[in-house]
Length: 70
Length: 190
Image (cartoon, rainbow over all chains, first blue to last red; front, side, top):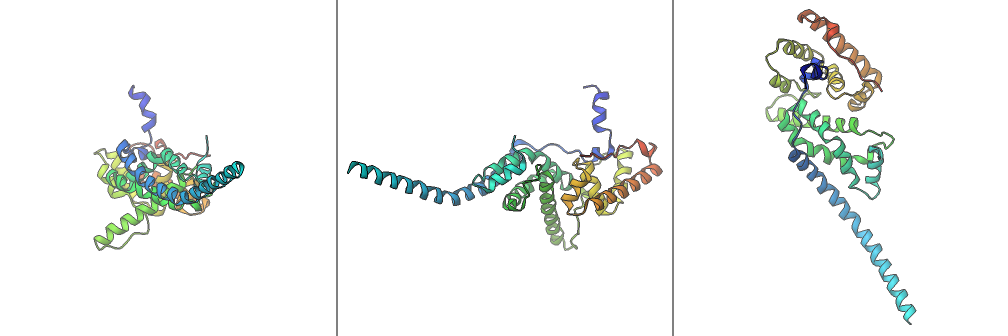
């Protein structure tokens, strides 16, 4: 890219002072991994309710099936 | 595309993993925010802490705010303050009331006289004015968004920004060969 085209992006000297290299994908992934741990923990807390509802549904369905059989 | 507000609201209502999408949208910007103020290595270490705090505190987020970035910067600022406070306490120095990135900026400066003059002028600003100025110049926030990050009124942010720019122009006008109005210190507005 010609220098003239790159110039506008860096024309503000204050912005130049704030230029930093972007993070590596590994850094972003490591930070996200910490978040995923918290997300997974919350999903696990939610899961027993879901499992209970599912089991309850299965049980009721089972009873219904047995009822029909009878 | 769902807004950040919608995703955060969804993450509170049975879809906690929706929060990860918010993070993916803003992770480079938040890392930059941290790196500009504390250096890349510290930013690498603190980024995960910002996500954990944001996730834990997302119940307090107003979903009407479509863009979560100012909120995330506010959390990043708190994480930085605690980092600096801990670092200073380790060195047995008094804790600062604000985030001060200038040690890191000095380390990044090259030998350009103009950059040094500008850095000196910014360093000479009161910290409260400097914070607003850098949120606008570095993070591309509007004064209203900077006010949200700092937890101050919009009018206060605007007046601090005005004072900072005036002081900077005066300082650069005295020291720099470039006329003050050549420095692009413009504000993005929404």
